[in-house]
View 1: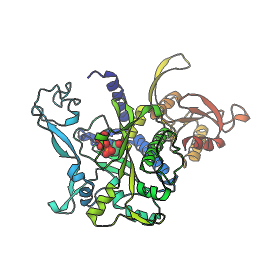
View 2: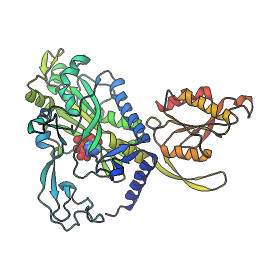
View 3: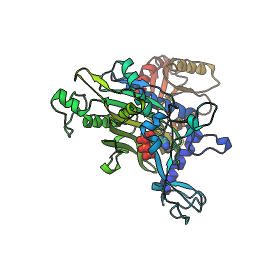
View 4: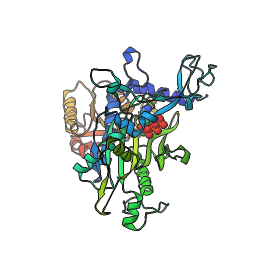
Length: 482
Ligand code: ATP
């Protein structure tokens, strides 16, 4: 495939991620392990910000969603009930020549491991017939490795939410419609991990199960179920919303959230799965796709899953999953809308979206290329760089440390006194730090009394600098990073 441009771009992203400490190969000193990635200092901050923002928008800023943090290993019956043991498989083919194993649906796109310049379809090797391959990692609980002790690393966080539905309902005193949100690790023994962190074997998910009344109950209570059309106002939930409107509501909410953290709507696509692509229990599924350099691919899936999961757990556990609706004076198993997002894919999207190279000319007329990550200040791993103009002037250093101590309890700051100021700015540009503060001789009063205790505040994107008094810094910055 001739796609040197995207490969080149991805190579730059991968190299920047390593050079600046966003993402490292897991176990790199031992040659790495395929499909596993570690987040370095900047990556860990970026990831934490993204998860905190999701958690805040899903739980803290709403009355109708409660949080959960469940274990990674659960009772294996969970996966029987969910269908993962029986069906969580990708059809696989083995290449008889290179011995590689590949997903049958990706076979033409994959480089042959023995002849990397070729894709598998060009590899002359004969392929086996597609066979199912279970994607769950198996382990054993306790000292004996018998069949009776088999357990699985969860391949999604969602099932724990269903299994704890009744407990959360009881303690949170919520009424349907309401949701349960969870962020956590998931594991899939992907056959062909690829595209950097996009398809990993260990990754994190941010999932919401939003429980709603079945349409019959909505109709019974309201006389009818609201129709979804272009005039439907999604800003305010209404009692007559059925699953279709709730589903569209969540698609819209999620896209707005992506916009709020810096992914422009134009970089996203909605893909409404066709009838024959839907899982048998799903009424509708929308994938939110991001235009990655290697193709437009899924960031998040938003599925209307009916009452499938709770019904399955009721059947397999023998415990009732019914909800008594006081208003409708009847019992039912709630239906669910599930927005399920991948943290790692989102981090990759944010980095790809933020990366820019631009020519800049310095005061001496020299032009160089500036690499800048234009992260939205909300997600940026470091919010502000703090620089004393010279490190060998104790008054400047002392003032800079004072500024650091004012800001540090409220945001991630990076104090840097090493090297020429231009170099320090560039280092922070490449880390995606939206603001830079320089403490200079004017701060100390050398530029006149009106400049005492003022600093320069530099904007990463425009590179413009303004003079701001130290006392104004905190409110000014907080306004932009929250
Ligand atoms: P795909 O079709 O790309 O394998 P999926 O449809 O199986 O993904 P879901 O089961 O819907 O994915 O999982 C929800 C989200 O979890 C995905 O939208 C994605 O962001 C994330 N995710 C799933 N598998 C992986 C993976 N192997 N690596 C990183 N993130 C993943």
